[in-house]
Amino acid sequence: MLYLFPRQDAAPTRFGFIVSKAVGVAVVRNRVRRRLRAIARELLVARPTGTDVVIRALPGIDALDWQALHDEVTKGFDRAVDRMVAST
Image 1: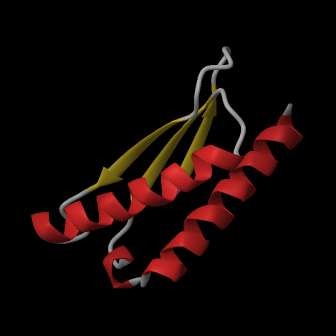
Image 2: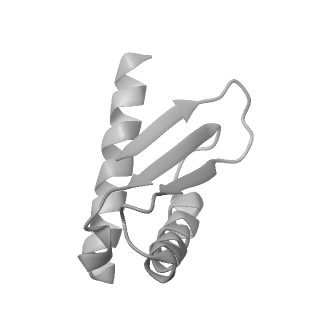
Image 3: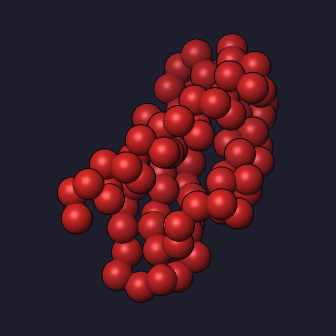
């Protein structure tokens, strides 16, 4: 799940991650969080500023390989940006 919150200023985009115990043990949760942070760094380069992005990892995310996870997060982010632009 990906949530996008516009901010009033043009400050840099910020990412936050919610990875609950339902995802797995601490080692698994930390691996998921590291992967999501790596994807977020890539998204920061080519995406608009002034937004807060919260990614909530759901159970089963640890079973995705790198490319599938990258594609899911990127598509979700693009859809959220499109919805945000359309609503303004």
